[in-house]
Length: 313
Image (cartoon, rainbow, N blue to C red; front, side):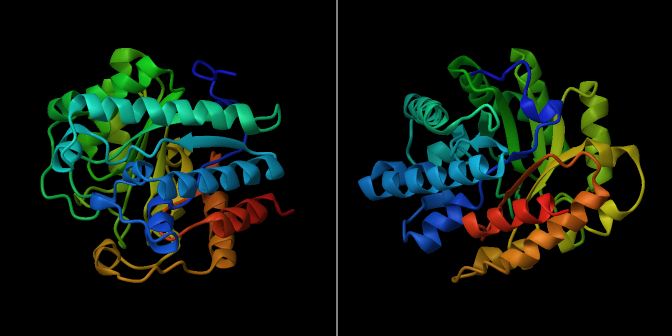
């Protein structure tokens, strides 16, 4: 079943995404991920088995809770800049994208039900470090940079694309414009620091308004990821129509700052039950929160608690 022109989350269907794939692979599975590139796990049998278990488990939670499942490809670090640092050619990177899409087609065939639609989401990550970006692309540079991955996802049949852990307004605009050029639905997920602002220093409301102005509101919606809910609760606690544009959340289990997470040698997986309750608080402030998942430190336990908290009467 293909959802490209009618994404179920845009029509009232509650959806879930997965958790912190990279932190699960590194800290729970003991798999080395150079540059935090999850797709590198696919180079070994143990890595393939770990990723398969992980996504099968997430798919089962979606079906059990009656939610749809947004399957994010493990391509956050599979862009040209990061690929070059990993010694990969353009041909090799494109093959990685193809294999990711093919694996999710199979996952959809295995688990999807009429009550739980599965959406293939092509994931792109920031040009720089998601925790401490050393440079900021212009809008034009960003559009050109992301056009390659977005084009591949469009060519290969992804239902949508999402820029995850985006650190600046210009990159958000560039992603949406790259998607507009090939007519594939797009989402921008900003990350924020402990003060609720983007790593670039821009405010979340400012960022959403700016991307919408520059693209005539072309993004399907916006998300927040890679931050603990307490880092941005005050920011979303006010008024403004920009809050209606935030449809998704993939929060960290940990309250640590990005700098602290970058230095952490042990996994801080927080309290799954508490995280679920915090999502409930966030949902009271974001009227259109439809897509929920996790980020750093989260696994199937957190996703289950998030769904349970949001489904509680």
